[in-house]
Length: 141
Image (cartoon, rainbow, N blue to C red; front, side, top):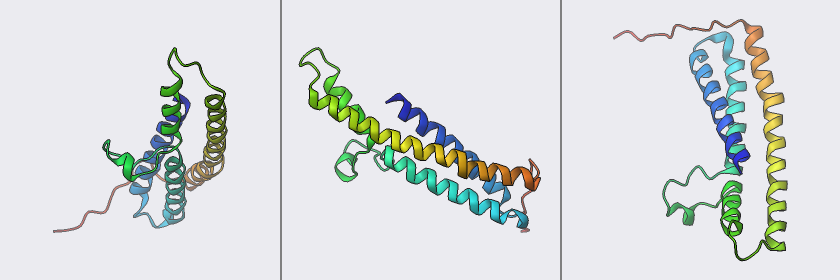
């Protein structure tokens, strides 16, 4: 379960980095393609994350309105079996196997985003020799 949370936090950090770079390059004409690739990376990370957690849940009542995702399912199962009695059932073990298999699919998707999409973004960024600091256009009063 911690692995899921760590992966989500890691990909959130990546998403914020791409957002920051895109924001600084959005006015640079030669960076339009890079910005587009960055937007695609952000979209893929968002879609991936929404399969693992339910970001729309803000209060305890939101459980009614928004479907729980993998992380909540894992926490629920842990809460049910993390007790002395009753002993862990075969059904609980089977459910855990199902959840781990689902996580493995999402982990594969994450690895693909990192190895293909983010690698493409990084390569294009490096090859473009964009400056580390860009001066934004300031509108005149």
